[in-house]
Image 1 (spheres, rainbow, N blue to C red):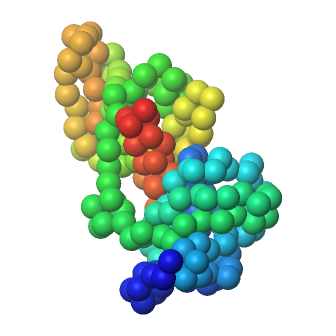
Image 2 (image 1 turned 180 degrees about the horizontal axis):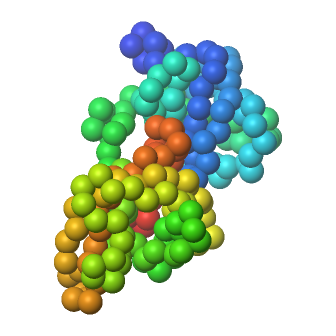
Length: 201
């Protein structure tokens, strides 16, 4: 199979980063071959070998966002993965912010160790459930802590209050809407992938 020059130009040898499930995996792209329809990825950090058939997002060296997506075709060993030719992501998919109604396996743990129930979440913000009259109030009020998924990832975050609204199911509580700042755009992309996978379920 022969790919056009425009496809070949999307494959870059050198440093790259893969978003895979809840992990962000640094590594190197080697022996890229548009003619064969594959390229090799060599992780530069220890990571559990992924499942063949997984979809991964790719951020090329120097890029601010994950700009391409590929399929993991073969895991030869822990040090060499074969991926399909990457397809570019539309700008809307590079910076999406899917919201998920939170279940009991999500919680926000404040710096003081208090656990706060979530109403909904995305990689850009959280809706926190507080007894009416409690919690951060007023646009710009901040809260620091860790977003925790039971049996999954942990994301250190700073939350900035954007709104307060009634809880639709419990008049004794309200929902504090927040904008969330994570460690880096790459971390936000990983969380977005987790949320989207749960929605696609």
